[in-house]
Image (cartoon, rainbow, N blue to C red; front, side, top):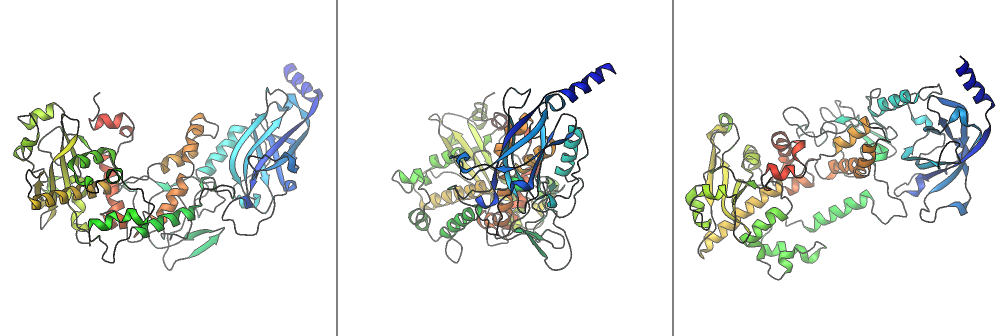
Length: 562
């Protein structure tokens, strides 16, 4: 009791002082694409309240006072500065404040950059609260914000409940700060939902848009449009924006030279129009392909720029691009010959490779058998057979025609990766369990133009498969999990956060123009409407988190000795 009384009396009779600070924010009108009438931020309508370690302290609050123009930062002209003043500061009672609460009663939101407190008793330096988060008008927040005293960990628990959407399972508004998971059910009502047991897929951010019967309902709030449709969320078109937390949106300042998301979309559309072929949707000749680099800003490939426009046809260049091109992450060391399929024989029949030793032995330099070349780690394989075979019947019923491919490559004494055999496979007629019908092609050893042409076509089908084995939208679940599980002051959060900025915004945009039904992905990749579904199959059968980094991936594919 004596100790308690002593502490109380110290708090009552301790000297008080005045602590001043600066609030730096960016008003909404400083950003591009803000067309609605905006009101300037009034400091009198913004309150900052301080927390001690144990409780919200009544009396330690301040309104904002606009700084004079000469206090502006010349390097950040878009910043607005306001003064803070806390009077009767009791060092014993307050200590160094670990947290604060800011309340905005203005009409519009603003981006709070940071708050700095100077000359805080007990602090060795200025106390700086980094924020970089949007603060909406108080009336927009539906979760409780009372003034009762709570320990900080209780306040943090309440914040996490909001971020995890434990009390908000409805339609999300732009001022909601919710990080929750959802399946890819908005790509189109005639596309399968990605993210279940049969078609697993990394989760996207939840929007809360309702699934309903009847016609499309549009609810427009601050340019955020919600879509309602039976069974699926209505896929948004390219001019519509879907919910993501406001802090995850890409906000370009008017002073920045970077283009807005709409400008980026326009660039993508312009490029796609530039490379659009004739009405029959195919190139009539290689000359038409080469013409792409003459009338657009597309960079000329180095192999052509060197002077020989046919150099890309060489087998050496084919092998080089396999490990230096758009997709170098599938080639692996060949361990068994001939290659075996992992597809279920009961469902797909015999899918094993038909490449024989006689097909390739003459191209293996001094090796007298394939087994000896394998022992010396000189044979590699690019195997897309099992990935695409289950989809070929459906794909080939469309205007697109494709094969499932296997490519055997030999690493020469000159350290060149050369293709020695390509196997093109189709499902046999009838039930899937009838197996595959395969044809093996090898490099021509004479000047027969027919053999040369068919070999070039075989390499073309391999390139088509390789380009179709495209990326997953893998990062978004980590963005969501980081915000749901880690405090903003956690070291891991601080490490990851700069790399996550804009990810959810880009992915949301992609669902309107890239991966949606009839989007760019379906128009460019040979799988067409089955592109996303086939990537789900790859994720299900081949993707493991602990095998994606380096050197684990190289070791898994045995392209790195370890």
